[in-house]
Amino acid sequence: MEWFVAPDYWLSRLVFQRALAAIYLVAFLGAALQFRALIGERGMLPVPWFVERVPFRRAPSVFHFRYSDRFFAGWAWAGVLVSAGLLAGVDSWVPLWAAMLLWLLPWGLYLSIVNVGQTWYSFGWESLLLEVGFLAVFLGNDEVAPPIVVLFLMRWVLFRVEFGAGLIKMRGDECWRKLTCLDYHHETQPMPGPLSWFFHHLPRPFHRVEVAANHVTQLAVPVLLFTPQPVATAAASLMILTQLWLILSGNFSWLNWTTVALAVTAVDFSPAAGTRHFAATPLWYEVVVLAVAAFLLALSYRPARNLLSRRQIMNYSFDPLHLVNTYGAFGSVSRLRLEVVIEGTADPLPLADSDWREYEFKGKPGDLRHWPRQFAPYHLRLDWLMWFAGLSPGYARPWFGPLVERLLENDRDTLRLLRRSPFPPDSPPRHIRARLFRYQYTTWHELRTTGACWKRTYVRDFLPPTHLESVDRTG
Image (cartoon, rainbow, N blue to C red; front, top):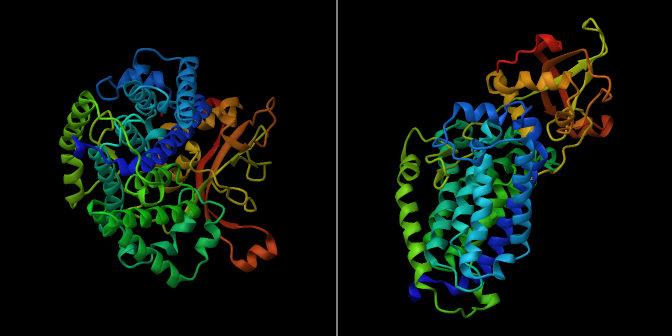
């Protein structure tokens, strides 16, 4: 069937597959390096506790049948190896059926991790990686030309990512309608990047232009993905430019990078790269692709209905395999940046004038002179959840007590998630406290005179001085 394939998109497929493999690699690497403190046997939210309460049908995962930290580590590092192989192009060296199995491997490996990751893995980019990763299984390799139906399913995902984000903004915070959200967002976003301070200090009229351009890119441009070329290429290219702007402005894990990879599948590179000739597509492959496409389109009913609903929800999976999901970001924008600052003391009696020493995180603001770094697409899960804790203690209730307990023990795996602990490994603190501060960017003048990019104001106590015996372990 000639209509089944699009040979002009061979380079689009190649770029997408290598980009997706790189994102998988980062995701598995983060899981391997962070899981012990977060969801390990002695983690803040242990996997064994979770699988006892949640049945397999609600969260399919290999860890329902067996869990140990060693097994999880092997599982995550296996994902790293498979992803590295795909990044190197191993899928192009094997038959079509073997390439499909190779792409199915990281999807299945990561699904098992996400489904037991609990609040640490509750972000939209987890479902996005799984949805896109499942579609990648059916894109084929160098034996066949890219299937048109899978390319259009990729555009359908991209449409939902962008259009869903645009709708949730217009239906949510009024500052998006007033074009004023970026007066606050660059300062209050979860994890600022090295350029976020400069983005915040752009002239306010420019912020209005940024918001207006965002609305156009998310609400009007996605429709053009389904138009003929070269319009679809122009629409995808505009989305890529917008995502690169967002990448420069902050740390949003691999959300923006996955969106860029998706947009590449809509770009027609043939005028520059030419069209390759492929062998005839096997009948079995056509049948499998069309059956899967029909199944995914049927599953798309609820996400599509959600887009049209006045009660639109964002970043939600309608099935436990995360095959077709709903997306969105920043339906509301915080006006204030509230940071939880954790401090410890070795004094036996904790007083206001005790020697309180501050713990420093890798990504979240703390030290006023510590300039934010670029971490994305790598995801610092604890740092992100600390931002939510600043918004409301309820977000942190299940895991904050266990975090404090592990800091009081100088737990090695937990300390590895931090940039700096103020206590030597053999001398844990006697008490831990947490205080809430309002953080603001300094002005140009303050930056030049003090060297600090942040200033802060005490708001209230978040956790009173706590010792090991008094930590709430109930969650």
